[in-house]
Image (cartoon, each protein chain N blue to C red):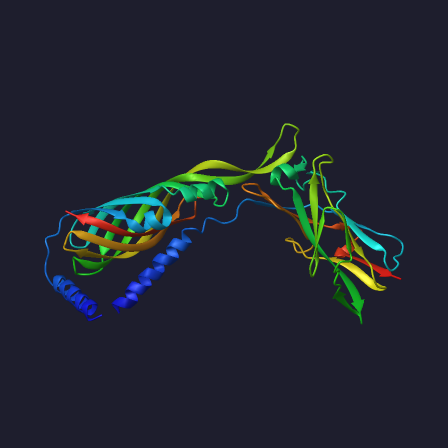
Length: 189
Length: 191
C-alpha cells in the first residue's frame, strides 16, 4: 500500500512540477478514441492543430463499425444507424497550463446514415399494410462540448470530453441529438 | 476540488453515452381504432352452470381502417399468429363490483384463455378462414348480478387488442369495443 502511495505522490509531484514550467510542445496532434471503439463500436480518429496557447482547430472522423448496432438496426430495434460523421471543431483552453487544462469546444458535424420509417403501402389486391421502410439520411449538426486534457511526457496526450450537437435539418429522419463523447489518446509532434 | 471535477466529468461522460441512445425509441408500432372486434354472446337469462361466451367472429384479417379507403391487412402488417385482449368477470356484492376468481371454471372453444386476476383471451390466426379466432366461455357457478368489464385502452375509452409481432414486424394495437357491451360493460343476472 505504501508503495502505491509513494508512486502516487511522486507522480503528482512530477505532474504539478511540470505545470509550473514552460514547454515547447509540437503544433500538431493525431489521436484515437478508445471509448468509442469499446463502448459504441465506432472508429473515431482526430487531428488537432494548435494555433497558440489557447486556441486549436481540428477535424474528427467517426465511422460506425459495430456489428451489434447493425444487427439491432436490421432487427428493427433501433430506428437509425449512423454510418459516419465528419466533425470540424475549435477548442479554447480555460487554463493557463499547457500540459493540463480544461477546454470548451464548438463543433459542426456532417453526418449520414440509415433510418426506418413506418409507411402504409398497398399490395396488388389493394389491401393496405404497414411496413418499416429503410431510407438514407444526411444532416448537419452544430454543438458544443467541454473536456479535460493532459500530457504525459509532453507527447502522449489524453483528452476526455463530453458534449452534444443538434441536427439542424432533422424532420424525424436523422437523430435529433448527436453525442460528442470520447476519451482520446493522442501523439503530439 | 479536482476529484469533484473528475467525478462530474465521468458522470457527464456516462450520461452522454446513455443519451446517445435517445433515438432508439420504439418506432415500429401502429395504433388504430376499429370497433366491434369482440362479441359477447348474450342470452335472455342465465342459470347457474350456464356458460357466458366471448368470441372474435368479426375479427377478419382485413379490417376497415378509419380515414383510409382501403382495408388494412392485419396479418401482413404484423406477421402475428395471435392477438390478445383482457377482460374480467365482476359480481355485485353489497352494491360494489368485485372481481370474481374464475379458477378452473372456463372452457376454451377456439383460441386460448389464460386465467389470473383477469382473463387473457388469445385469438389464433386461421389461414383458411383468414381470421383471428377466439371463443372462450366462463362457467357461471353462483347466482347473482354480474358484469363483464374491459380494461381501458390506449385511447382512454375502448379496450386494446394487441398483436404479438416478432422480429421486424410492426406491432399493432387496436382499440376496439365489444358488441353487446355498451359503455364497456355487459351486465347480466344469473338465477
